[in-house]
Image 1 (cartoon, helix red, strand yellow):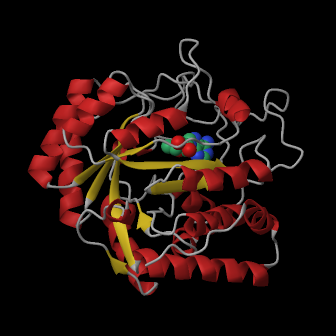
Image 2 (cartoon, protein in one colour):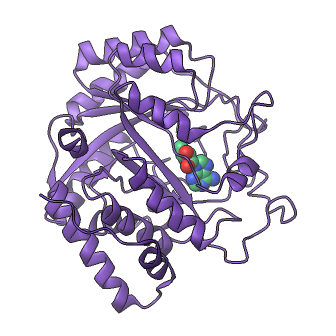
Image 3 (cartoon, helix red, strand yellow):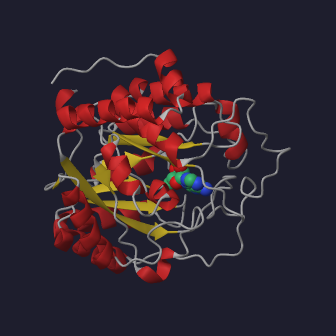
Length: 354
Ligand code: 5AD
């Protein structure tokens, strides 16, 4: 399968501004065809475990930021995570995704032991999403067998990024440099952005999408920005976080456009239909994502008693639904779309092409 022709900056901008449903249908169709031609009709499922809601960071958008004193903090034990991995195994999910706030209480040794045990006891592929950890941590975890790492760059507008992502200990970070290091360590690399961050312009978003290609990403997750009332951005402080003169709306429709365009610029990439998208349209957001470019779903396996404590944004879909009942409904809805459920780890097609 050759690389289909990729849209230019102007074409991306054109589609981001398009509102006519009939014209947009041609974008959905094009993205769906590229998805089907390049990664097929299989939907891979990744079991997501939110292993800790502790966080050292003060991200202005995120509900589990260090400054939010209103939530009890938790950290799962290895045994609890292993139970989730066994549940992933019994549901046939090929991958376990371990996600947390940037929690330095999750030590290098704790994570590497955990990765080793998950791999040897359940044979699942392991994806880590633990924030901006040191090169040494990333290296040791890779050696322990971690397959993939997710770190969204959130926005390619660096001024905006630093405004919403204050430095830790006075040190500004460069997520693009971290993503390069993750790639060099041999991980499959995932990144992505939020859609409709206050201050994000259409041109910013078009540049984000082109950057997905430049970074040669294996996995790209995009979701709408959802304001959380316990955060500076959610409180709508217009002085600290002014809207752009050409502000992108944080809507469901805009998110589909970004999913579809992402598929056009990265045809062989794994793209999840995200929980944030499903949170805007519980009825059909997840399915529409899968029909407009996505090929992955990440069912939440976090034990129920911790779910409401990992509220990075409010009204998160999945807080009330058990892994079991979600699993059965999901399998049915994927079959209803005429798609098949993935078996095996579902590594990125980019790997074999690189
Ligand atoms: N709205 C939408 N997405 C959010 N994330 C964090 N907070 C929010 C929010 N309020 C996303 C970020 C982060 C990912 C784990 O969740 O993009 O990288």
